[in-house]
Amino acid sequence: MQTSAGANQLLNWGTITAGLSDYAIDSVGDSNAVVNFGTVTGDVRLFDSGGSSSFTNQAGALFNMGAAVMADSLVND
Image (tube, rainbow, N blue to C red):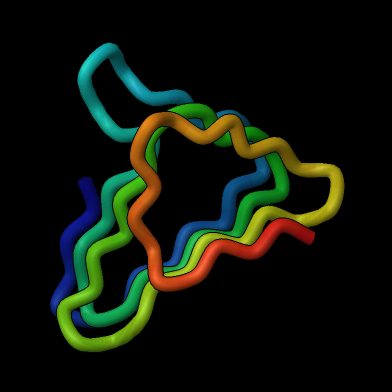
């Protein structure tokens, strides 16, 4: 889990996979942005405390969504 009083940004070029009972990505802050160029598998929670949150899956990237995805916007290029 990533927690911050400010903005959080994650640029993924590799592979992120959830554990057995955990999130692949879990981020809390004023605003959260994930840009995926690689592979993300599992649940994603981007909780913003006043700003906005976004998950952008770039062309050629793979997002294997779990049962729960929490974000203000989800873009699949």
